[in-house]
Image (cartoon, rainbow, N blue to C red; front, side, top):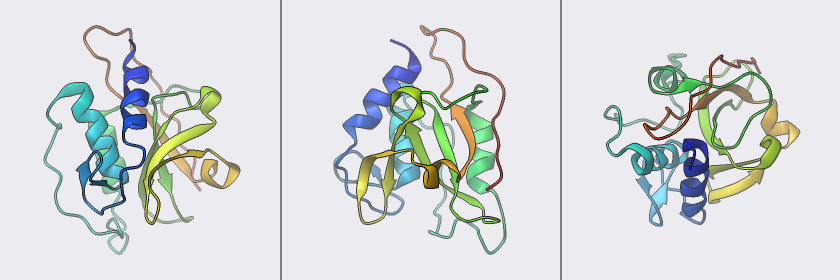
Length: 159
């Protein structure tokens, strides 16, 4: 099974997990980063680096792209073209703001994604026009030893 398929299957197993800021425990609580961290652990074991405490504003006052930088350190840039299942989407929630939301593409043609959303928990949502225009980058999980080649090329779009 491809790493992307494993990532989607694992993300779907988290659906229904309540939203809890800074949490990453399937069934008990997760935020958007916690969901991606949990999928990472299911795919690779240990997380690639410790995650420091963070606030919901994601370093907005300092204008630091903390989440974007971490994704670039540990994930392969997404392939050119439309989003594909298994890719991690990075969202900029407001124009000019830092990127601070994550989701995992789950539907054929990139039409759905799984994410943890305040007040909703981990859900699968349509990648509707309002969500799609907030995507600033896409990333692929690194290739597992028994999987095929990874994606290359980054997709960035300022919102």
